[in-house]
Length: 140
Image (cartoon, rainbow, N blue to C red):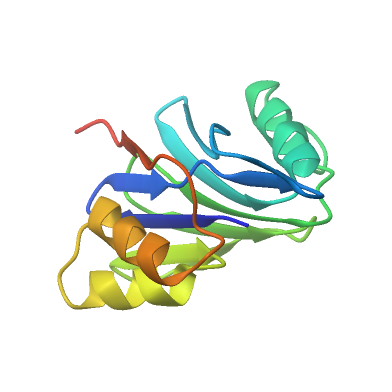
């Protein structure tokens, strides 16, 4: 239960996670590694596996069955991962994934930045919860 949005070098993500009836608003779903940004939606266990796979050099398959990931490369290229399938290039000036993605994407398409898009999703989607965190691409 997550929303991740990216536009103009900034990725924003909520921080909510659920397990049964427990709701936690402190889970980090975005991270930076070697100049790339990553945002993940899906099972927390799969997110941890994917993050470790990236940090260990991306050898073999990532081993994620129930995860969507957007990867933003230093040159601004956007890759979309879904499960263990190879990623594909996403061609759009902005991208959003997760339960509030339609709201966030719509907000960005009419001018909102990534953080504003997350705020819109949080207002209209009960699964976009917790603190909004942002990370930025390094300028080349």
